[in-house]
Amino acid sequence: MNTQSRSLAATLFPIGLLLIAMASIQSGASLAKSMFPIIGAQGTTTLRLVFASVIMLLILRPWRARITATTLRNVIIYGMALGGMNFLFYMSLQTVPLGIAVALEFTGPLAVALFGSRRAIDFLWVGLATLGLVLLIPAGHGGQSLDLVGAAYALGAGVCWALYILFGQRAGAEHGIQGAALGVVVAAIFVAPIGIVHAGSALLTPAVIPLALGVAILSTALPYSLEMIALTKMPARTFGTLMSIEPAVAAMSGLVFLGEVLTFTQWLAIAAIITASVGATLSMRREANPPVAAD
Image (cartoon, rainbow, N blue to C red; front, side, top):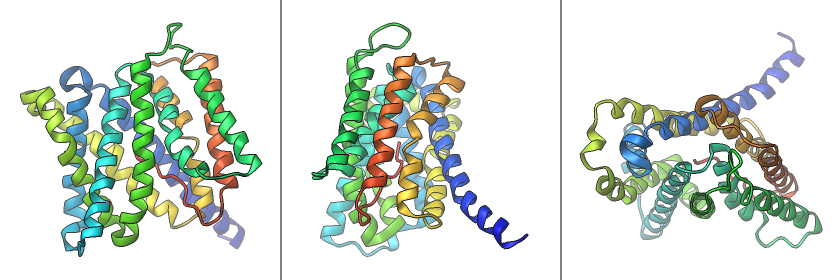
């Protein structure tokens, strides 16, 4: 293999990992939605986080990290944000198509990227994102109006995603991926009571356990690992730009796995939000960190 071929392979390898990670996350979301009739969104979130926390505890052994009062506060807020994000996102999926839910949720990290900016170009990205929201909210799925409660859940998940980014950066700076493992444990503890109250003994249904384990692997363990590898092999700005196409990946996953057909207006709205996210990522200050996927 010559130098040019090796360089091309080195460039395409992390991109391929990131695309696989995004497909894994959205496939996991599609699988999770199939569990809703049995244990609801609340129970599904609980099992996903419980299994994910067990997997990460066994692999990363975060109890070896030195915890201070400040670290504990950051990890707790980070974990609660992660739990709230997963819970609200799954609640939105009960009535909102996957691609639209992800697009609405994506407004959270987009707001983080644009917060405090006063440059003229960034107002263009704000305008595009707003246009996407205006097109999405009134426009419906299958000719009907979009469920506003479900849309509110997705936007709430976006708020939690913003908090996840802000406090995840602090927790990660102190303990790296071990901080993420601790955050998943906190998220599981935070959400578990809701799922137990809602689903009760149905959480122990034999048919549900392998599905929940699959969701935990597809939506958490596998994509987080692939994203960490990809981020070490590409510039942060490139990572953030590629992650911006996730609403489109979600829409395609919803179409393939769930039969969710979106209208032209909805695709146009998703394209507007993706363009705003790509533009904000490319124009952000170099010291800023791009949002990471965390559905």
